[in-house]
Amino acid sequence: MKRDRPTKLLEKRESRRNFLKKSAAGVAASLVSGCSQENHFFEDFFKRHYKELSASDKERIFRRIEEKAERDIGVRPTIQDPQPIPGVKFVYTLSLSLCNGNRRCVEACVRENNQDRSTPIEYIRVLEMPIGSMNLESGSSRYEGEVPKDGKFYLPMQCFQCDNPPCVKVCPIEATWKEQDGIVAIDYDWCIGCRYCMAACPYEARRFNFSAPKISPEEVNPNQGYLSNRLRPAGVVEKCHFCMHRTRVGKNPACMEACPTGARNFGNILDPSSEVFQILKYKLVFVLKEELNTIPSFYYYLD
Image 1: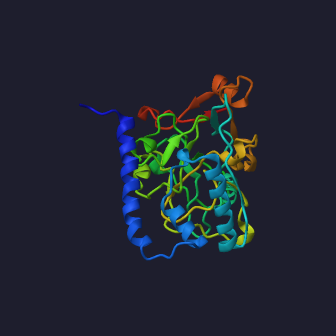
Image 2 (image 1 turned 90 degrees about the horizontal axis):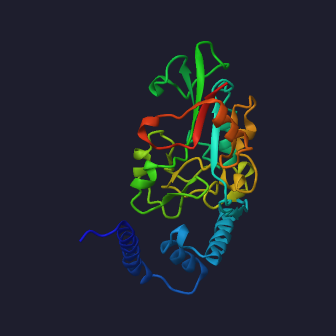
Image 3 (image 1 turned 45 degrees about the vertical axis):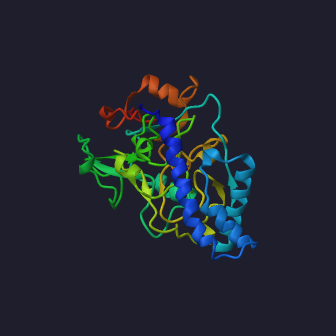
C-alpha cells in the first residue's frame, strides 16, 4: 500500500536521529560526563529541526550562539527570531529603468548579513547585460569601470522566494522550507551541505560555505536573526532571506535602503495601499524564467 508523504518524512527524520544516536554512542563512551563543554557537545550533536524547537529551546540555543560568537570573535551579538506577520506576503519589485548597476545593494547586503569578506559569496548578483538580450549567459557580474555603460542595462538577481520553490522540494531532510510571509528559510543547524538545493535553483541564488565566514570584529553586524544573518558554520548553504530580521519588525531590506536610484521597492502584496501592489497593478512587470512555474516573489518592471 502506498504510504503518504508525511509518513515518509517522519521516517526520514527518525532515521537521521537514529543514525546520530548510534554514532554518538561510541563518542560518548570516551567522554567524562558533567562539564558544560560536553553538555554543549551533546546538544550540538542531537540537533533538532528549527520547527520542532520550543520557545525555551530557542532561547537556550540563542544564548549559546551569542556566547560562542563572543568567545570566537570578541563580539557578542543579539540573536532574535521574529515571526511572520499575519496577513503579510512579502514581494520585491525592481525597476530596470532606474537600476544603473552601481552595486550599492550588494555592498549593503554583505555588511548587513555578515557575509564572508574573503570570497565572493554575495547573495545579490548584478548582471551587466547587452540591451536587447535576456540571455543570462551573455551577462557579467564582474564588470568594472563607471556605470551605466552605453549599450548596457543592469539586472540584479538574488533569491526570488518562489511560491513553488524547487530548492525546497529536493532537500532530503527539510532543512529549507517556505514561511507564511513568503520567505524561503534555511535551518543552518539542520543543513547537511548536500547542495541539492543549489542544483535545483534555476536562478543560481544559493551559496555554499566552504568555511565559516571571515569577518573582522569591527565589521560584524551584532543584530542577528536565527534564520537570517547570524554567523553561519562551515558546510552549509545560505542565500537572501529578504532580511527577515529587519522586515518582520517593520524595516526595509538593507539592499533597498542602500539603493541610490530608487529602483528597489519592497512590501506587502496583500495590502492594496502598498507601493508594490500599485506597481504590480499598473506597471509592465515580468519575472525571470516564468515558464518554469517557480512563481517568484521578485518582479521586474519598466517605467
